[in-house]
Image 1 (tube, rainbow, N blue to C red):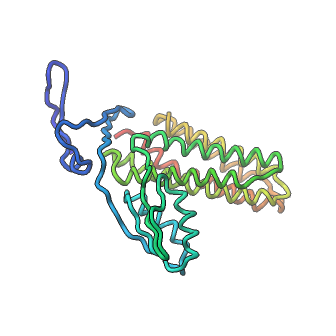
Image 2: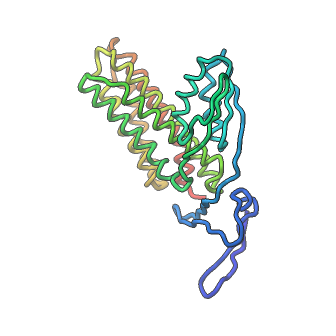
Image 3: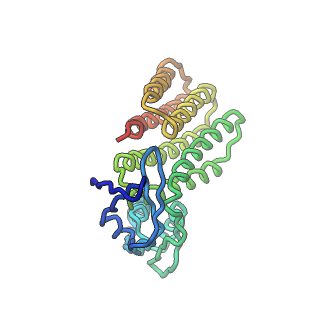
Length: 299
């Protein structure tokens, strides 16, 4: 929505804020907002306490596969309190496991077939950019662990699992911020949301590759292939945070070289499965191209 600039004093210009935004954040005349400049855009943030929101989620006992999905999406939607009902006591263990992926959430009350989850220490939205970047650091660390352990032939899957939980915590929080309106830049928000989702899939696939590598009898080509994937990911990260439009072409060239490597190698039967799963990892990274392009083309 357009706003007219109003001259204020000798050099200052002012605008009025959209009513919908001030109502959402419960702002009143005289209160303060934080104004910052990000990539040439003016970004407004407020520390005003939003309205408390509450919802109910039921977890069926016969389909535990949707437990994580339902809890994560209720959290991302911005609810401060989630009443979770379930059918069997064994489901409580799943709930306790999954809330480790929800940053700042704890169980505040519990009965036989119900728990109440509350966002008691969720970071401020102003920390979004720091945490968004942190997600990429976690992925880079996971690539490093996998390669180091492959070369040494010694594996410790627990440390990769810890990284995955940490990445999911950050991803869910960032998606929560995006869904509750960090900025009015919808193309940027959408691009970030897609990137975060790709991050989730990428680390999940990397964990699967790590498990396969523990059993692999031959790892020579897998190490080379994973090194190239790690290099490609580093290029993607650099383009997202530092790139310009012209850098997109270089990113696509790097992507092409990665696929050419896969087409040219001859894989032994002992290494076929790991190489195939690393190729899935490589193809997942091609999904970054579209949201990265959205970020590079300024609106």
